[in-house]
Image 1 (cartoon, helix red, strand yellow):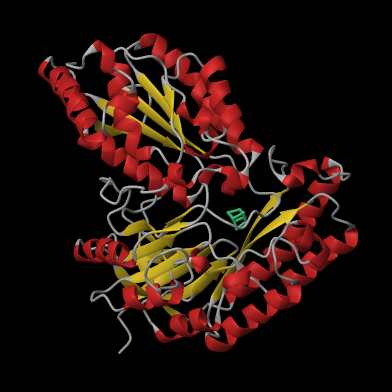
Image 2 (cartoon, protein in one colour):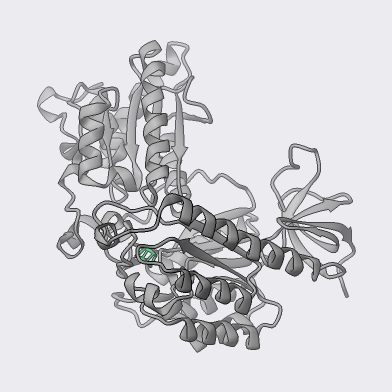
Length: 485
Ligand code: SF4
């Protein structure tokens, strides 16, 4: 690679220059009869999946063919999650296994990014304990990955810049996160469904959550850029657009334009074409009457709302710094149901937060029975070092937490089945998957994002109409019918 020896620091090679250097390298491999390949391994949430699609886009731009296994890869990028201890351990275990693959292919480049790698002590651990890893990158450095690869291919040292990222909240330099580029290439994992990030970071500092420390403060993308991206996707045949952000309801703060999330939704719903819009995640404190009105008035916005309650106890909600009470949360649910009686509601619950008493837990069960969610995503509390909750006294044993978790699931599973059975006989619009399932049968997702197993002939990635014929706890069955008139 034609980079002078004194210029092999990633900070000295801008992204465009880096892409062209790596392309030279991948072209030379191809000329010698070797197809250069890259594998992007993803852990965690939809935001990470969206980031991985950008990483895959950059790899493709640099001349790598994207594959789905590390064994054959010349470049492996691992996009990690830090939300739970278990997620970090899984990522570290996979990163450890890459050592044996790299022993067979010493020219392999390995980069580790995402939320875990954005933490100072984790980046340090990668540097010290995983010598086969070439570099780490934070969630704000995705666009710099070509520079990291180019410098390493040119003989530069292993590089762990995330070690410079301050771990604690407000001293995170805004400049570090500013100007996330708009024009990164994307290789999307689906031809019918697309993630569109509308904002990055979070200002809320829930006491159990590491996200604000690793993804920084909220920054919203300009509405015109988001609209242009959604228009392009719809023109290319995408049928479902999911808007992503840690707290989409606070979209728009800090922008020069006077725009909020309902205004953005209204603008996107005006785009011509047959498609639907989803969004995640919402914070209950920021759900406004205007948002509910816009959802109810626009058919293109799916009647589905994921609204994390986390606990039904005001005492625990306060300790979590959630900034709402159970009652104010219920009022938002009531307003959503009043405007859209058929809306699908889901939530997140944390069981066994430090200090949670039996009475607090009973409040959570009461919340499940009152709201009657279609589905919940529940987790046993796992302390994240560096968060305020990790310093709270956690007197519950693992057995007590597990027992509460089982009771929670018992209550919810019965509700989920009842709610699914209530849909039997309904005729619903279903977006089919990109390919039939392993059983050869086409599945899809209804308006509420529930999986529907379809009988009858259906093209992949298209809207069809289906009559719901049966229901299981996590699956609906449907037969394809002609569209209603
Ligand atoms: S709203 Fe709370 S839970 Fe969600 S990302 Fe922000 S701090 Fe974490």
